[in-house]
Image (cartoon, rainbow, N blue to C red; front, side):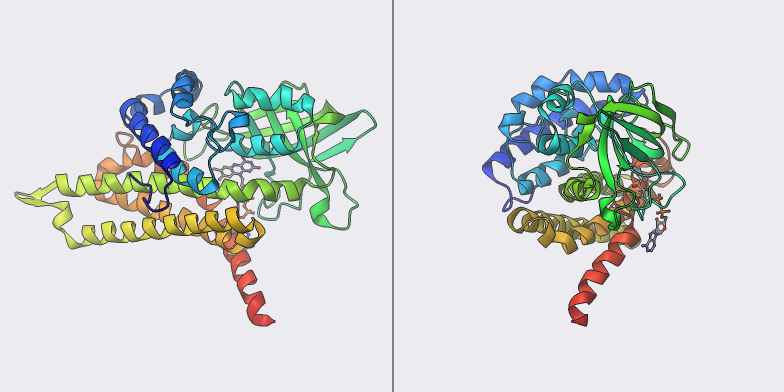
Length: 401
Ligand SMILES: Cc1cc2nc3c(=O)[nH]c(=O)nc-3n(C[C@H](O)[C@H](O)[C@H](O)COP(=O)(O)OP(=O)(O)OC[C@H]3O[C@@H](n4cnc5c(N)ncnc54)[C@H](O)[C@@H]3O)c2cc1C
């Protein structure tokens, strides 16, 4: 069980164990077959198991019972997120996948009753998906205040024009939460943009392509879209939250989102770790000698174990601070876990591939899929370097005063 017993509660242990057993019995054995299928078909298979998830309390795990979830604390969610992360289908199965989870939290906080009925309720039921469009191909995403997408707000409508890419899951999404400049003259660069809900069946919304990532364009939820908005018109109530507050809202969304991502990555890393250990004790090098008898293989295993444990404790520490003292108090810890855990993930996947030899780079094991799909972890939700630089600046501030 990946959960650390003295951090687990009765509730998280019960849900975590039931979910782990379910994944081992029904989902992990299907992975190879499902990863070779278009996701659009897999989505139906996963959704058909919604009742099972509701029965074990693993549906909408990050939400209160009013919204169909079990009402867990952030620490509890974090630990179950590791269990969901042990398969690429875990989060989707539990209706906890990014970017929907973050978008749901935005709609819950800022959606008007009409928006809640049209977009939030079907999301909570797992009937529709969404995407989040912020990054633009021609501008450095690490400096998001530079943005060309515009939303003109008239008395009755909003007109959105712009070009985004890496809009994850755009293919098949019902709507996109678009970050767009609404107040170009505001002297504060963080008060120029707003969030606008744009339905994807709007005549002004175009999905240009699913961007091919390392040879795989993917489809449906497992894809990253390039999208264009050409004077797309939506009613005024599609402005989400206060005008000019887009960046503040994006920050609110990213805090808990980074805890979820990091714990999902730890789930992946611990799965790859188990695979490397199994391979190390079963692959015979010479009669009576297995790979795990070689010291350099042992080194890879020892380093992976230490890194995974360090990352897990750091993420739970960040979750604890966030939960008990607020997101602002956890700023340094969040930056630290974001780049540290993403690198642990990458190291562990890479070592697992190395220990599997040629098999590791084939699609006969899940390692190659993880290698391709998870490289982006060091880039999205803030690149390694932006988090490192932000963390160092925060630390140095204290030493300068
Ligand atoms: C798998 C994946 C999924 C994504 N999903 C979404 C999504 O759903 N919606 C969305 O809007 N965007 C999404 N993105 C985009 C992501 O947010 C951006 O890629 C990210 O913000 C970095 O922007 P960029 O790619 O333009 O890189 P750039 O900003 O051009 O940076 C390139 C490199 O420059 C270096 N660098 C940048 N800033 C600094 C600095 N301050 N100090 C030192 N070095 C620096 C870093 O090495 C960085 O990797 C996704 C990206 C990936 C890979």
